[in-house]
Image (cartoon, rainbow, N blue to C red):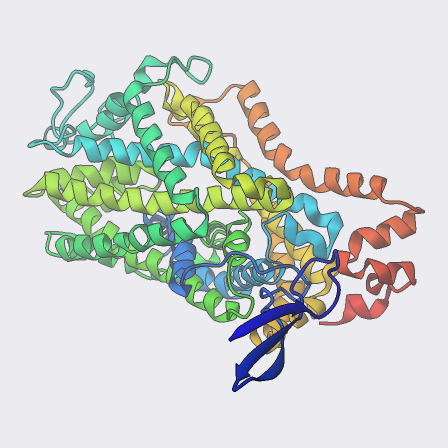
Length: 608
């Protein structure tokens, strides 16, 4: 038997699958039988726009864990519980859930749908409205800036983890080389509010880890501390090997980093509720004071917490969802992941306040003397509480492993936003992802070295204050306006229907077009109106440092007008024609040539 494969047509230079004719010739008893079959090779799956299918997550759960791991970070442990306690306990949940429903979830859903439909990073998705591409570069820059100092927090946790492998934890007594004469054990300190005394845990963090006593301020940084530099290098290596192959590797890492915190939080809660005073701490956490709702500051803090806790505006949700299958139900994902994030914040409050109640009881002081937020909670108060437990070294190791995993997947998300956003915008980088990832993480490491010097805490505070404050709110505002008003909420809803089979309900469309932009505009105004210069304890930053901070914040925000001007100047034709091209999706530019511009009709602006 013999067979011949012959082309149906003469070869052409066109790319893609070609139909071929399969001729099967068989010989039986001296007679030849011929059968002919036309065979068309299977074409690669394509996006409706005609692009080849993008790399996707290995499993759906990889994506969900990545989003949860990014959104659930250190702030869920050190920020939300304290805000809840400070602002009316359980009453704080009223404004928190209100803003969650009208702004948090709609914006979360919007970013997941935007990335999944357009299959590109934070900058590339703006082919739907090219004039707004600058906001893509804004969020990429913000994610990069955050990486400069966020990785330092993880390196602190790693330093504490290594320090916990001892018989006696180093922050228990005042007889260490780094302690000052002002150091006083809680047992010997009857006046906890005395500004002239410091606990061993406080001095260990500030003098033993940071060595801030060797610096006079931000203009006296000194050299990087080799111990923190080594820890930072380990963090960078972990990030690189989690990201270098894209979602295929990062999707496996989050199976550990996204689930471990829940295991540890549960273990700590089971231990915490058995401690004396723990129930009093939890009661204080949940105590309801509805009169606090009359204070505008409570509502502003709830709105701020929603903006930052869900992780919208960093480009991470867009990058992660761009690797989903086109038909993935992003609506269900948005509801699940945003709900889990808020529930985690609430759950962590029980863990935190069970230990704070224990500390209050043990030292016979009011709860507000030990309750605090930020780094002071997880690197001073919590280690101090753990040090008083039997088997304290074991509990310390467990706690700092949790901090490490909480931080590492959030850092992975920020780096992925930068990497995906840039390699999708500059296509030649696709073939060199490993090298480009190395370049990004090494650059981040070099900048982060300023934060591990003797005066590094001052650099850290400055970056934390300016890198992602007003600028992230501004970025999400422009993003919401670009999608809901210029691209059109009606067109965006059609895109979602193309993916999941049904259009978003009227509630979501109203939130996208009116409620969320108004909420974000209010938050931007409040952010400017309530701005306070940064400080670290009693140290006030010099004017040049504040100016440098504002330059950092403005460098990301100015990407929006600068790119819009660039786009309008580089397009051909008269201004109206250039504007039409700039606000019309790239796939519809042929309609502009025919004078059909949706955005120039009243119906486009009125429809919901």
